[in-house]
Amino acid sequence: MCDFTAKTHRGQVANLRANLQTRSLAACENWFIVHGACGDPQPCAISFARPISPHTISFCLFSSAKRSTNGVRSRACRACFNSPPVKLSIKHDRHRTPCPEVVAITDVCLCEYMSHGHCGVTRIDGDHFHVLNDQSVDLLVKTALSHAQAGADMVAPSDMMDGRIGAIREALDANGFAETGIMSYAAKFASVFYGPFRDAAESPPQFGDRRSYQMDSANADEALREVGLDIDEGADIIMIKPALPYIDILWRVRERFRKPTAVYHVSGEYAMIKAAAEKGIVEERAAVLEIMTSLKRAGADIIVTYWARELAEWISA
Image (cartoon, rainbow, N blue to C red):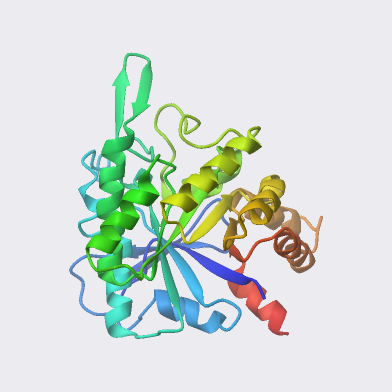
C-alpha cells in the first residue's frame, strides 16, 4: 500500500486559538499559533495524523509567519529558524504526545518568512532580481537543523536551491542527527497549480516569479539530472511536484534511480477536482481513487495529498 501523507497548513499546537477556512482550498483550514497563551489540551498535529493510521503514518507540516500590521514580513527571515510554527508544533507534540508510529516531516523553505515571497535571499538590480543561492542555503541549513532539534523525523527542503541537500545532510550529521531523514523536492517544476496553496499560505512572490530556480516544465532531462544530484548529496527520498502533469517524470525517475520516490498532488490539482465535484461534473471519491491509483502505478512510493484522511476512510470501507 502506498503511504498517503497528510498535508496540513501552519502548525497546530497546544496554545492553538483559532482556525480559518481557506478561500481557495475547499475543506482545508489554516491553524494559528497564539504565542504566550495558556495551555490548551489539544495535542494537534499528531492527533490529526493518528486517526489516519494504518494507511497514513506520516504528516507534513508547513508554516507561515504572520504578517505585521502593515502586511510585511521580516526581510531578515530570522523566524524561519528561531521560533517558527513548525518548530513549536513538533517540539510540543514530541514532548506532550509521544507517538512513535507517526512520522513527522517538516517543510524547509524560506518563502513563507520572506517579505517578497521568494524561496531565498534576493538582490534587486534595476529591473532584475537575483536569488542568492549560497546565502539562502545557509538559512535553509539553520532551519532544517532547528526542525531536527525540535524532534522532526524527516526534513523536506522545497526551495530548489543548488547544493542544499548536501549542506543540510552535513549539518545534521555533525550535530548528532544522522538518523534524521531528508525528503528532497528534487524535481519541483514551475507551475500554475501551486496557486491555491500560495493563497492559503499568503506567500505568492511580490515581484517576478520562481522560474529562475524552479524547473522548466518542458525539460525532462534536467529533472533527471537534478534528482541524481540530490541522491548523490544524501537525499533519502526524492519527490516529484506537481503530480499528474509530470507523471511521466515520476515514471522515469522511479525506473532510473530505484530510490524511494514521492509525488506531491498539489493544491491546484486538488482544487480542480473539488470544483468539478461541487458542480456535479465528476464523483469525487471515484476521481480521487483513480488519480491516486495512477500515481501509484507510475511508481510513487509516497503520495502527499490533501485527501489523506478521506482516502484512509475510503480504502478501509
